[in-house]
Image (cartoon, rainbow, N blue to C red; front, side):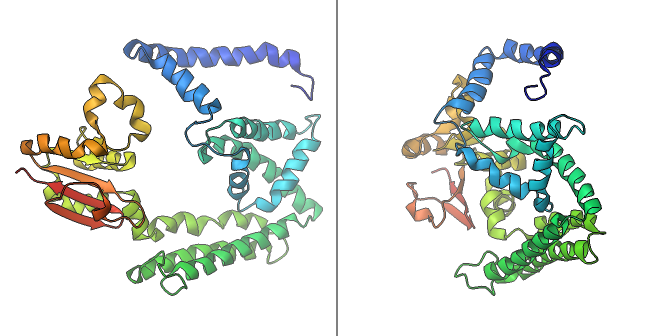
Length: 357
């Protein structure tokens, strides 16, 4: 609008887009507001204005936070990124619409960089126009015989080989005192090595005979995409997901009158696995803070300091079970808890149970 002086066009038809958006969203917003009178204040003020502008916004990060994600997200075409952005800037007259694509990349990036709260997924809309810009630049690079595609192949080879070395370093054969994978997980090391080997191989094939096979670089992430789910270390899985622990202690956990946890993600996993909607948070509210502030949510949170007194009052109603996520290096003995009847630890997940007395 500014560079091409298309003020009248944007101000005329831009309002039409806004109106269509309002008409689409408004019925849903009114329906929710009718059920929850606090909806507009919370949805508009807390989730948008405060998260954008407040200094204590959730997921606070510096202004440059998204630049590494933009570069890493450009793989396996990262060498085309500078040329694609430059080409978009040179198309100010909009002959090829590349300047529009550049604006589509830059404006959301700037907007979310200014915001106090940041998450990598916020800039996902930037990658669609960026992919189109880089595709156009790659086609021209083939015609002009540019070195960009060869450099891109070299970067992919280097990335794949670096990944292979990293896998070796963090494996049980590496130099780390506490390797990422345990000796019984050697097959996972092999899968990770294959994934990075595929990346390097495809990078090499893409530039093996000049740049005629440059499109093969698109296959670089294929091995990683297919194998990453099988190569995740057990300790990472155990530290993030309670499902395996639940399967092991299911016989003791299922009959529990009360189930408590100290992490929102674990609470969601417990609710799903146990088919229960009465999981209680202990010591940490997280993203559930707003819901727990409702009158009916008061009983769903217990402060750590008050747990002993709460347990004394409630354990006679049936078994009380805790599924806790421990801090790195933390032990059960360090937790300010009464002596439990049953304990089972799996990685950073701990099952603690108190039986009726």
